Image (cartoon, rainbow, N blue to C red; front, top):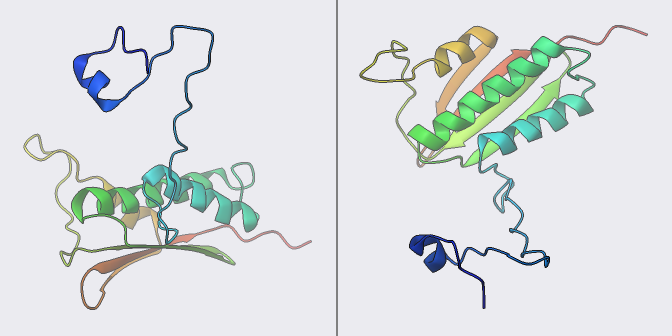
Length: 163
């Protein structure tokens, strides 16, 4: 039986454990980075995938700090928009090409993204898509049959110097 002393009533019901001895409590289950189809379940998981693709393409925080940071910001905005405004992420593809990074984020909503005036007190936010548009060489939204859409953003990457 788990020790529940010192826990709030709702924590006791949820089965949270608290250890008062030197015995290690049960570790939490590992955080899921992706669903069974490899689609990231959070912006953090999407950023990690982008880091992996960039590094495999020879783009690192040391070799191209601005491009690296821009890619992480863009994918964070795209995935967060899908999670917050469009019902989740249904597809996720990141590809590096010589001089470019392509990021595709699918969602189940037929509603097209809206660019609105940012920073209004009555409607906070609104900064994400303008930032994505400013950083990327192209941003495209296509409807997906039978339902949903895919937002594709292409970010310029530095080309490696010839050896």
